[in-house]
Length: 95
Image (cartoon, rainbow, N blue to C red; front, side):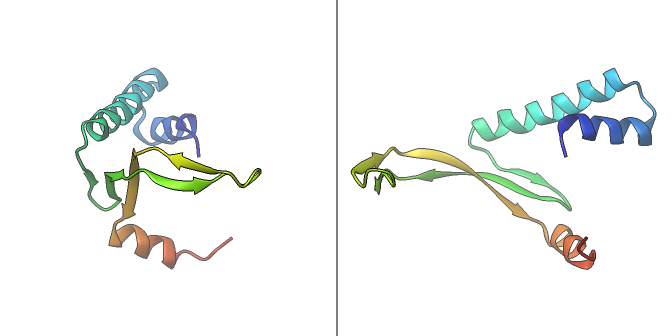
């Protein structure tokens, strides 16, 4: 599913113009992104939690050459689905 698909679904259900729906969707994603950039947690009730974790630098290996490299310290985003989302996903028959 793409952002355009989300805009289309919301447009069909709500009835606002596609331009207005696209602006709202874009603002929602921008708000989530800005909050995560600050290192804060984003909790969406009934959906899940987005969180930022700090990973330490570590040694790795280039799979093509086998030489050791250093993987830099970095921040990664994690997502943990809520119990409601997990239950909803698991109750649907697979296609």
